[in-house]
Length: 375
Image 1 (cartoon, rainbow, N blue to C red):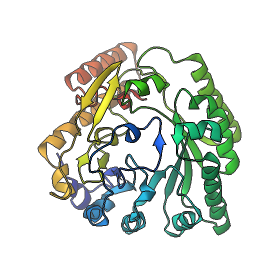
Image 2: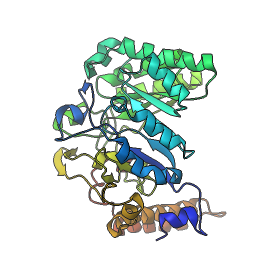
Image 3: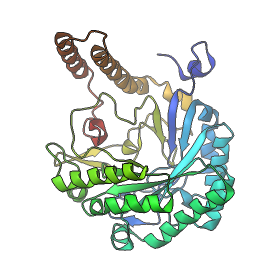
């Protein structure tokens, strides 16, 4: 396997081998959202990441397109966030984060523009206080929307291209009923886009009951109608709106958080494949069964360099499964794009693809994750 350093400095140089290094600079939050594990599953000794620890990653920022300052908490609680962002920008790398919007006041808005933050995503759970405040306990919807509007208006006033302002919408059985109106609101206030995400970290049976996607079978008709209508109105408004599947289909060869291109680093420095495997206490409900998973870590940046951790044999073995599965998928696709495709060749390619995935199953930790099924 080619070493990461060779990809950057050697003869086989390619541009930015990593898509994103996600760093959970704050494992704590100032809200008590009804769908978040941080509210219900306290992790001992959870502390903000220090700038000193964050700076250990500085040599590798030029290796990735993005550094995303986001974990399971509110990043603006970490007062070092601006120093961290500046360190990233010095590597000509994009930086962004997701916030609950409660701390997004005028001073913060001005700092976002001044410091050239590339993306800020604000989490909402409804188009009015009644639903949002119930789900995102401790926040006030009107205040958050006013904060977002101030940022957008300030961007226009200063003619600033950054930050891109997105709204992140958590889909639950309650919030999905307000999705269409939220799309209209996002367009009205001038947000750049809105994306609806599933409650895909199903950490308890209560969360399992509150999700809107199915482990199998057809989604609810009203859910499909709502997402369909939301896409339709967004298209009519020429507004960017994204959402995910509402029913688990066949297993993907590689999830969208491909461990060969993405990595999550916890506030205490552990290197993990993704946020879903980065919590110390990591329960998961899959098809009605509660599974207990440990944190999946391959090392700590305070002990070894990121490059040393990335090149560990067990980490390479973990990632290689995704590499092989993607190769199998690409071979399948070549059967469909052949100049003279025929049914027999396609059937043979589909059989070979199924056999290839069976021989190279996802890591056991990933097999029960909704992301592996396009959710």
